[in-house]
Length: 397
Ligand code: DHB
Image (cartoon, rainbow, N blue to C red; front, top):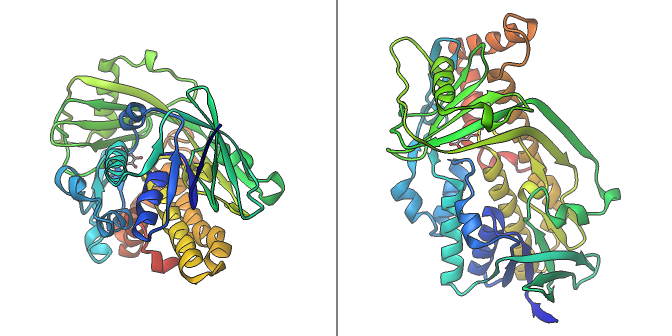
């Protein structure tokens, strides 16, 4: 039986678990990370790539933004298309200079793993957390299995950053929360292609054939998505079909979509999941373990990072000032932002996806929203400030 101990036991080496470990270290708070997957798997897993201003600020504050500054692309606006009409939302201008960067989530994961291991941080890959116990006492424990051997990690707190299918969410006592779910009746087919982006900023588009999004990863790699049915399969989507559908759905007069070799194809379902409690005793949940948003607007990782900020504040208050006030407020502090993002992700999703017959009442409401964006600076500002992410102070009460 392997026995380890630390102050904060972290389950999951995604962006939230890794950031938490790196951040706590700056305050002299020790942690150990247990991760089910291999390093190669984590670093290769393709995810979204939209980094909000707050996330950038945190990475900068921790000195973890060097590669992002070099390889990421800063955007100060976004294009929105409806049928064949395209407008631009200049979000930096509307939000006092706040911007987003495009930098793949797996690149952030790589940077955080590197930083943590360079600092001799403890990170156990390919280690399965089997149960979390005693989180209603001062000495919670994470039981795990590594290379066929059993072990236990004793800690003061457990941070469950282990995603929707992880053990953290399953361990939270059922009586302690209510959950809320919404499944959207469509999915995204996402591709990565070796071709220069056909746009300098992202394009979200409504078309009568369905939603499309043009994003990018670098000067040479484009990331694009099309709305597909939930029961669709990548086998139904040849490269030719994907390019021709993207070209139709993103098309505006005088604009052309460049095509290139596709090297990654995958389908992502769209759903929302919420629980109204993120903590039980000394077990705290962050990221996808606690909430899922539909991908439109790229909030998933940014919310996970924001949860970690609240967690760090709470742990620092506990260890440095012997105060449990922020631990007690953790759920409420995190949920205010999470619900805001849930609403914004729903807004972006329902504005740009084909939900009902073209020309239906629902379609007319979508069109009315788009038309309102054209005439109202207030409405554009609302979209912009949510898109770049509201500052933490906005949610303080
Ligand atoms: C990306 C994904 C999103 O969901 C989004 O809204 C914007 C960009 C991306 O993968 O680049």
